[in-house]
Length: 115
Length: 108
Image (cartoon, one colour):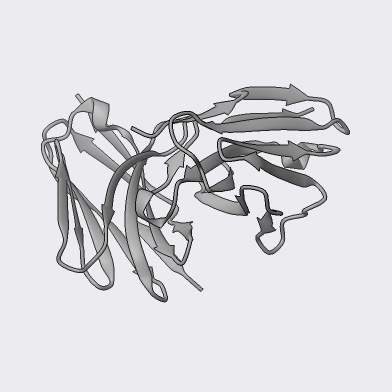
């Protein structure tokens, strides 16, 4: 089955630094990748959608300059949290799709803690 | 705006005690309704996709059904390993909108 690898699984960083999270589709070409944020006991909130080679589309209220998304190839997307602050601490999850008929496969998530 | 409401928020079951989870939705142009299982600290794991009212799908002790306004996830004779949060999501156009989930705890 389709597999999406997300790294790192946990990261702790100091306030003001930047953190990069990688999302790779291992056995399929992901034409579209999605990035979500999940707070404790809450559901997944879509942050942005990216298509390979195109600029990401951000959901309303998501700061595009803080959450930089790159989808440079059909198997790799990255999310960079710039100048992280404690309020950015959360669980970030990526998802990849090969197209409408192929469903959505999720990564294992990244727990970001900003201290 | 697409809305997905799941109930109950939490469900505690004795091993072998069957129950159902509800997912009610409003969406313009439903393209698919998805059920996922999420374990603590992990990403969602795909269970089912339903596309049209009347459709049913089964996998081991789980069975998902779909009507025009809601979906049910039936858990038959659950085991402790079925303990997880079950998420429902609707697809309209290209993206998914998730409900808040139902956390199921199955006691031995």
